[in-house]
Image (cartoon, rainbow, N blue to C red):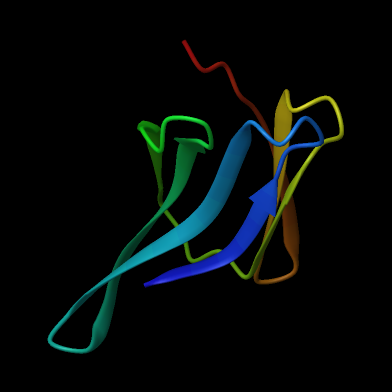
Length: 79
């Protein structure tokens, strides 16, 4: 299931929370990155906890996640 879509300011990068379920039960989550122009998946970042919310910094170099009231800042580098 895909949720919480975020588009970069230059409209070239799309990120989302991607949740996998097994037998209708939460299994794992990842942050998925797409190139908007090509539609190609650039990267999947598997996270060890459930994400409640996601935001992309204006410069596109960091993402911020919220999980159980805890804010995590992730520096990202997509090659």
